[in-house]
Image (cartoon, rainbow, N blue to C red):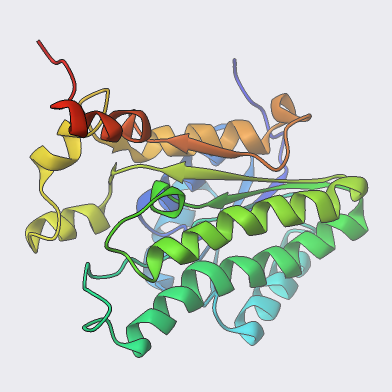
Length: 259
């Protein structure tokens, strides 16, 4: 099944790298006019040039920056009818007594507040225009326990926010869904491996499919949820995790039967 966005304007926050970049590329391949919005302006311009899109500076946690991005999109491209909220940061796996409030607040500012700000501004414009689709990048970390005492709660908040906004804007034709990636092969994950925060064997052993998720696999799920083919789907959280959620409980029984 091929999705076709027919020139619709799609804004991708955090679109300069990782999952956001993959989303920008897949949406462009499907015919969207993509706006790559990111704090890393040089990288955003590089991705935009590669996909024939537009690059904009954006700090999702800053009200003025989000307002400026919305105005720039409307002036240069018209009203966006697709928004992908991929901008996010990770955190160190520290116990609460070592996780400073400064770090906690920074993660929550970007991952939850930033998602809300972009939804509120761009989603309201979609509602006024009569329709659109928002896909928020959450995480399986927001669906259960883990040593991520800011990131996990922030992503859980994104999942609940998705449900709230789906009900709020559904009557106005705006669909809001979330995708929750599992361990995904991105530059951020590579950094986690390099710093020994993450262990490749542990990540793959706890996935039913025995491998990492690829960023484009997340992007294809995002493109589907943003497309007309998902026209009756709103308020869902779709895990794309190579079977992480179903595999982890098996650890108490000796692990998955790989043989």
